[in-house]
Image (cartoon, rainbow, N blue to C red; front, side, top):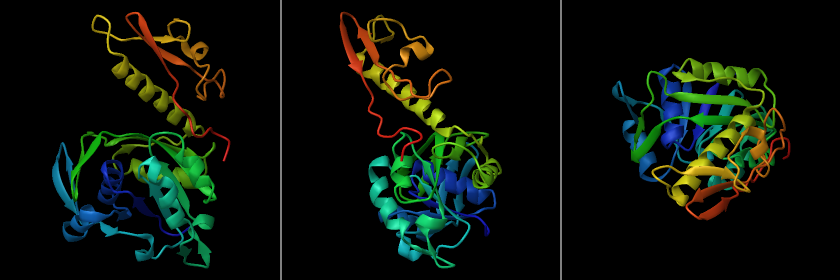
Length: 272
């Protein structure tokens, strides 16, 4: 393995924060962006606004795969929206890498996104796929600027192989992140963290859609029962200690009306 270089594909709020903090930590970083954001990055570098102030970081930036000479030791960090993952991965998969290989064969791709679909999409093309569960408060409001609100740590990023396991690459990526103001646990079951976050996000949205009863929203299982751990996980493919294939149906009660929310899960751990 050569010297590690982090190629951040999608330098928005999440990607920009990860790339900026890695660069501050002394690691080699390339940001991939487009449009006015790319123009601003090339002209002035990345402006990273944090509780400690605003810094301008002279991070290298490119607009497409053909502008970058890929090499052994590169890590592709996918931080675009999930709906864009398929097209973006197709662009990068067959790019040549020094030594006679292509990216799909020799380079790891890390899916730093919400949801659980991108890892499965990536595994259709890339041999080495890693999941990352992102807990990172950040915003991207104007070209060239990213606001990272987390302090003293920028966020928490669980990382592990997809569909499960760890290896030297996951450990090295986690070490680089830990040196760059992130809490970065290396997890052999990273998809469990991602499914758990998906369930939490789904419950939050269901509360918003259902409204409130006397200032609060009641969250119940199908049949009107209050959620009690694995017994409520009967519909959603969420790994738990009791059952890695448990599924849940979450319904929200609002007065006499009840709506059932069944989040669609596009991918499950262990299946490509």
